[in-house]
Length: 228
Image 1: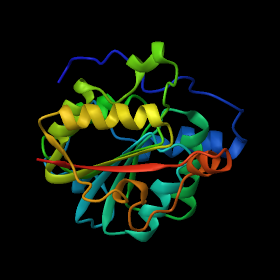
Image 2: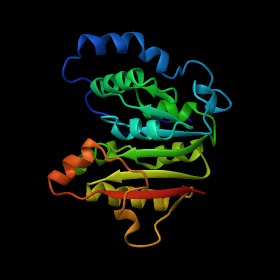
Image 3: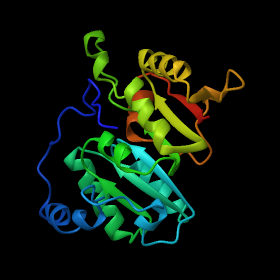
Image 4: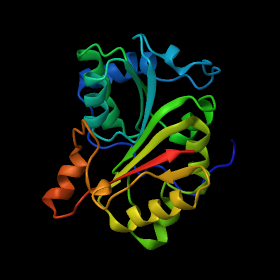
C-alpha cells in the first residue's frame, strides 16, 4: 500500500539532550535492533528475533516504553516490534533492551505506516496503539493516526481473528476510533458488556500517559477490535 494518510503520526522528534551513554547506544545498538525496511521482510516475522518466539505483536507509538518493555519481559515467547519516533523515548527503550538483554524486541524510529506497509499480509498476531497523540483541536483531527487508510493497513497486517487494541483518555478520540473501526469492514468491536471498554486488558502494566491522565482526573478507555 503506497497511499499516504493525511495526518502526521508524530509532532516533534527531539526533546532534552541525551546522556553520552544513550547517544552511544543510539549510534551503536539501535541499528542492530532496528528493522531494515530496505530489505524484503521475512516470510515469517518470527525470524526477526534472536529469541524463539511463537507470535509477533506490534506496538505503534510506545511512548515511555513501559507497556512494551513489561510485555517483553513477561512474555518471552512473544516477539515485540515497537515503533516510536521520539528520540528520548527510543533511547530509553534501547537502553532497557540492552541492559536486560531482551532478545524478543525489535524497534523502529520513524513513521508506523512504513512498517505496516512492509510486513507481510496477515503476519501480526496482535497490535496496540496506546494513548496516542489525540490532536484534541478539531482542526487537527485529520492528523489522527486512526483513519480509513491506516485501518486498511492494520487490517492487511493482522491475521484473521487477531486483536487491535486501542486506549485513550480523550473522549473525542475514543468516539472517533469507535466510529472509524465500527465502520470499517475488517473490524468488529469485541465489547460484550458496558464494563468491557472501561477495564484494561489482562496483564496491563499501565503507561506514564495513563498515570498523567488519572492525576488530571481523566479516565482511560480500552477498546478491542477483532480482525474479521
